[in-house]
Length: 339
Image 1 (cartoon, rainbow, N blue to C red):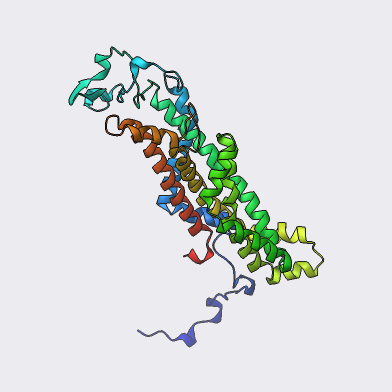
Image 2 (cartoon, rainbow, N blue to C red):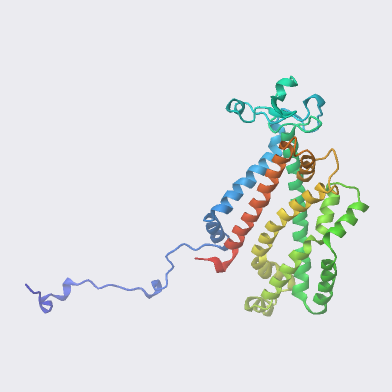
């Protein structure tokens, strides 16, 4: 049975009204740059795992010495070189206080008549390694964060001025950077530490002496890229001063690059501090950092490996987590990585 369209009355049809203003309507919600970056970094499982690892280590660096039943500085010679012993886990045959003595495995806690637990064991002076490991982490993180912030401030200011004003100013400032870059960093650091008294302040100054150079070069390149863009020229045409152009237009556009570079600076500073302390140019006894603890454990690695094990694990986790988080932030802030 066929249907004759000509016999259908016009009243049976409903006219569809098309609003031309909805032709280019955006169906998805509008997201800011930071919201979009957060959504993308949430998809990066390695970066999210790194955030949780870093939060755990940072919290333990401050809480760990408080929850430990032993002080980090107290020396008990009769408790020297005890292996780790943890309540509950000792029944499983791990962390049970059993160590090697004269080629035989013996319960050192029972032999020395020690009636307390040392979760990470003790060092050669009977100091609690659990408290010392987390206090050392606290010092290493403090040095790294302070050095990274100083590097960021100096690098952004120096590179921004050099790139924005250009000309002779840029030439002079870049020649200074090239001279500093040509001098081996380790030589400068050693000379500084020989002149100054070893300590946290000396290490921070030594790390930041040349650490800002990389940041300044990156910022200079970004400023050179943006300062001649149309939106900057339009702002200058409308009478905006240099301060407003830098703060309102250029700096927000390079903020992502600054954050990413800072995230990579922190693990570099942690490793450099550990290296200086390991070779004896960093913190001095009785102060502890990850570098000094690793140096102490390295000397007795054959007989007391636990002294080296835990600071090394913490240092490795910090290095890996910061680098993975830096990679995640770089992908999140890079507009070319959008799906």
